[in-house]
Image 1 (spheres, one colour):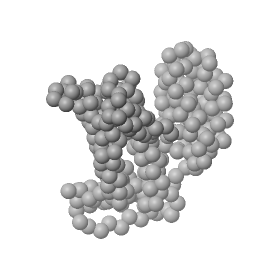
Image 2 (spheres, rainbow, N blue to C red; image 1 turned 90 degrees about the vertical axis):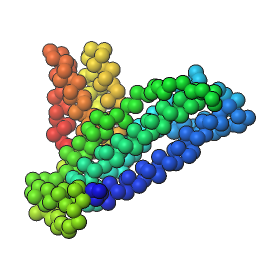
Image 3 (tube, one colour; image 1 turned 120 degrees about the vertical axis):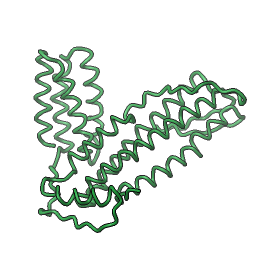
Image 4 (cartoon, rainbow, N blue to C red; image 1 turned 30 degrees about the horizontal axis):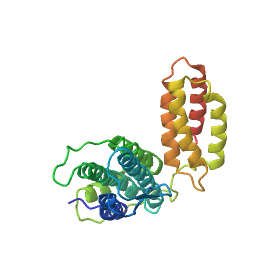
Length: 281
């Protein structure tokens, strides 16, 4: 069995524990919404859902799906935020391997929550003796495999190895990914972390002000897509320590959208603003 880095191993243990907690607490409580309660269930938005003498269906079922998808978005965002802090504590070679290893760990957790959601929905729609076929009603925005992999790729771009580390990092991969019990000395030719300073909250806020003055001229389909990403960046700009990988991912998505509007002068101008911001990351 491949040996996990400390980062990947801690994450795996934490997510195994979190999965059991959700199964034993959050999902389990939904069995009792038809009792004389009230049953209190976390809504993951600062509220508590309270149910008694309620059947699972209609609005209640809709709330169930909306709530678990909200949980997944928040949980995966927190996982990647935590990884950013963890990665900086280790040599660059270890970071590289850790990013590779955490992707299947995170995907496995997301898939397990998704399966649990579908199965619990199936059971709750049954009558105790007969149960309908399982049906996944979720959109799972932010929790799909490709989205997890893209977020990890952003971490790799920002915190991965410089050229000088390639030889030692390759040795680390051979000895640890494939489970060989060997000691590897990973050194950097430069004691610096080789990470760009990134953008500050003030820079991001100024960029968003500029963007707001231009985006109104976009075609409606483009405007909707851009507005969603702008909201993500606005939320990030208010945080004490912004996530450089989140900012970069959103900017790249914005750039892809605006570049696709060939011939639109407003979109071309926005693309120029985005390219200038990406130069800081």
